Image (tube, rainbow, N blue to C red; front, side, top):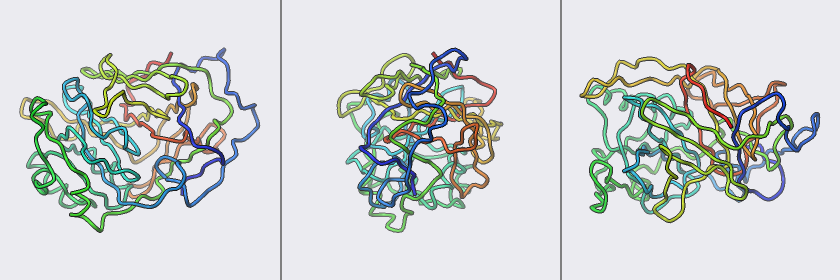
Length: 329
């Protein structure tokens, strides 16, 4: 279960460069963050009054013409992963809340298979996948609820431009996979108060060859999300904001897959160990992530070996090639 400190849940995250002369977190060094393991808090967000519900992962584009996103603000966890040509794409995890509509929906990538294994056997919603990948999806521990397999749950929004106009009704997908795994511990820990040792920061950004994802800390809002220099938009009104931002540096290799134009699909290795920046409450910590096996969760630990607690709310996890560097400021 999620480890959470007692108190009122709130959203707070931060980002920034960890410099030797920056101020440390409000917690005093040596004073551990109080936390308790409670069965009524979500293992995905740390929010209280939680009831275990099925897990669904939906692939979503994050280009400008994919805006505004429908339903993304209700996701429990948001992953950002690199695809062909230095573009990025979102894998949004839903469980606690199921929106009426989510989208736009786009295609699956090979990195999704390993990433999703830690969720048991979730519903996987995507527009499609290349023929070469179909046997891999069929063999994976997931319910294939793509637009091809569950066409009755998908529709085209004529107010949007193709191909970023395919939408899905998640509640219809739930009816098709009643045995999907429910939310469970995936290694995340949560606490209302940040741990000691964080350094003051306000922004974090990652630039891929053709994608730029950035976050700016706003008190009372969390990390406000921007794509390619423009504020992310929600179809329900307003923007997107994260409570915690994780820059998870992963080994990335050529997957052997690609698109019809010659672009190579990278494979993000999310099993193993590596470095990660965790940002919350206007502060940043250097941590180590560890996931020994595909069916297990991912933990984040501080230099002293203690767990790094996320802020209560929606975490965004950016899977970043370990040869790249996030810019903190």
